[in-house]
Length: 269
Length: 262
Image (cartoon, rainbow over all chains, first blue to last red):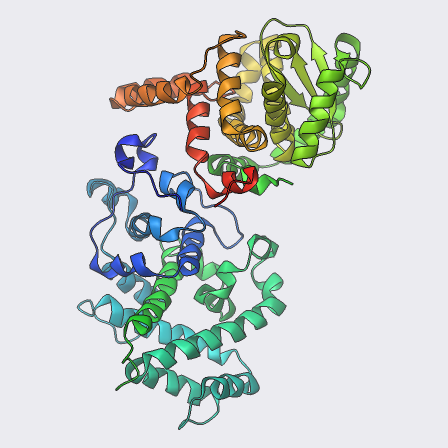
């Protein structure tokens, strides 16, 4: 596997090639995430909803991107984190912060506010806020499904003790996020897959040919849900949130998945 | 089989996107070519240059055939013109042709000549030719009529120049992917020096690029000076081209296109 060049800040061609990541505990876990998930995150940071490269992105011409994308994404997790931090902050403020963006915690807070997630407070941890955001997004997604699709997800995931209905699945998700993270992830996966199928039939109308032709990476992730569930392109195109909203949802999903993978006892209440 | 997506430099993609946001640019460019420029230049080629075929200039013809086969493109017409300056260019939207100076044919070996041809094919593959042609047309009008066309078309001209410089990086990638980055570096040295023998150190330009970058980034004033100087260039500095390919050779895309194990 090719490794990113060392000492890139000195070796980079110009300031565009350098990344200054603000040390951020909440993003450290990216170093251990799945390659495809990191790739999806990278795509979200780099491309807009039409599959066009973002003019303001600074990943594509970086040394680490050249040597790591798309098969060795762990090698560039710091660059992804740094790029997200930059998008999360005001450009002028970032300039006075030595090019660094704000901490991830404040980015999640802003995103939750923007998305109308209820009962969040500034002192909440990034993880707590992400969970609430994820529940909200998946609840909206479930609302788009037919009762039959919901039943098939619940049966497939082996969810017992809840009514086989939309409300039942949402209730199960709310409970599972606390008592059984592993099953929570499985349900999230199933919801995602079901929605991908729906997206494939509606995709061209909703998202446009550009994204589809670029590949299904973004569609298959949580960002697909957002597109499907009514927060259409207009919500995502706002000057400050067009990148951070989908990126934070993707990171929230990745964190849940990561935590379920490292904690074998996560099903114990 | 290569695709434009494989080789397009991100800065080229961005510049092209920005360029396409200029109102009516696409239709204006097409109209300009349609009214006659393409035909005029084709006529000029036929009148003043030698068209390569399997019988006439067979080396050039066969190498171009081989190059386009490797890239997966239809073969364009190839012309050779008499010029001691080593250069090549491509032109046209509907009927694309490539012109190569005699000094290139004379001084480049087969691999290097194919690399040069692959660079031109890169422009065709990425569909640069439409806008590139218009850069040339505005420049010609500016040269002929002085300051007025430059003033009128100033912002568009500068935008096109900016994009043109970016597009060269993509075409360079096509050349490197087709013939290998070492051949590309070798060819670059020969093209810049105009000499047939440049020795065996093919990476001189890459080192020189690093020296140039430390000069450029040494101060804000240096940066402004260098960027102002480049603003009217149609091509990026040669050291940057060598440097960009040297960076790109470590990418998965390059390895995939060259059939190197990942």
